[in-house]
Length: 265
Image (cartoon, rainbow, N blue to C red; front, side):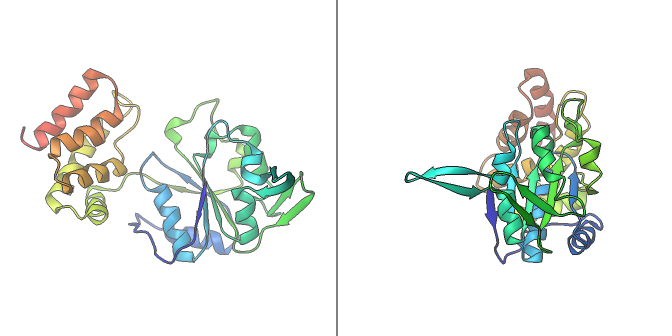
């Protein structure tokens, strides 16, 4: 969990009207749900928009042990005294920033219920342990994300939660845009960026067949960074893509063949 409020705007390449929709949602005090595969730019988009709007950003990486107290806060014993410590959600409400819950469906279902009064027209955060009821200021915004590819009956977003949000759908960029992103993020040569994107497009065709998860733009950036640092492209792709995507020797060999062919090995 962390907060940031700097003046630099992280690079983000829009694919459509997502920036305008996000800004309109913020102006109208509407919560936003981001949907898309891992590594397609959801978190970077939120960081970009927070900096662009000049808002502090509190990011929470959700997991199945996350409790409501982790979000809202708890009493701590400090030097023999009991003191209240705000959680990231409470700090965002008090300060008027963005609270971003990444992969929200990974959190326990009873945890997400605490979001309901913040995500509808009440825009309040009741804190039972202190007796407070915080009214969210105009600058506060609640943003959550999840990967639809991981959805199942046990880890789905309840309709009562989902229908409190407007939604933005994300996917991997088209080839030209993804090539530009890899170049922008790493400063690598255009030819290398194009080859890496070509590999990704080929490997993404294996999604749901041999791979549980598709090659992310993030992994392409990692591979390009390794090559820029002087590493052999085939070795870099093995470390950044193949071994990050699978533990199956046969699948790894098939992925490696695509990489070898791309670099003429």
